[in-house]
Image (cartoon, rainbow, N blue to C red; front, side, top):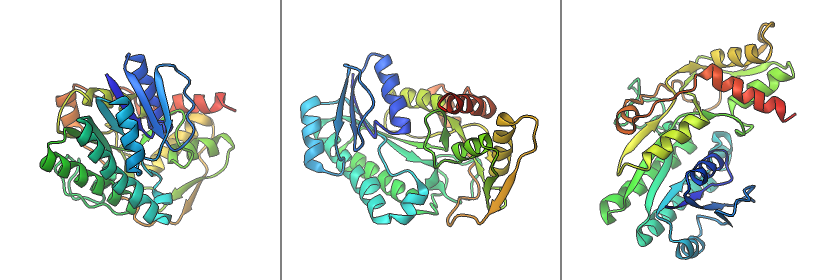
Length: 300
């Protein structure tokens, strides 16, 4: 199968490309950044998926059977400070991808986020829960969902929507909490806790997320939560990161002002993924953090 992956040079995109190649698929990478892959089985393109003509040429050349639309502005802080750019990439760019997938009859997997739930009133949060995003990133990803659903209803576009929870693992973005906590713990610097540290997230290890994404490529026209099965507070995460790095020392913490729009609780229901995909996360938070720490330590 030919699979086009947008955001192929990003944290999640790189893992997906490697897994797809290992499975024997032909992969077309699409990213604004230079790509590190050198495999002859992977066609790499520096391309802007908000440019209709550019993406049209890419699809015309390769005619992919499936498009994994991973590319996005995913840093919530960057999105807050650059709302127009975020709307263009996350919403308009998704519209371009949906339109081109329709024209070339390519199946579309749209990677969304559990941030679309925001401060919902339903816990654990299932796929039919109220959607109340609290910041620009979640709002633009929800706009992308509506675009994909619209193309499905109006034009018969075959598609899935995957709502990822907070993902971590080796090679993760440096802005993410797990990276910040582990890197500061390695230098024995205070770990910054936004607010009172009670905010929770359903952290998922990158390899588990890739497993679920690959399985989801086998189903049609579904909305599926892909998340860890542990809802953990920021305070507990920080203490666990510190203990992994410095097992004989008490964690050094610094409480700082909370971020605007910071979701208070992320407690995601993954029963649909368990039932429909026969999938569940195999990596405990502690083991995933240890693997991430070892990778960071080796990179020094």
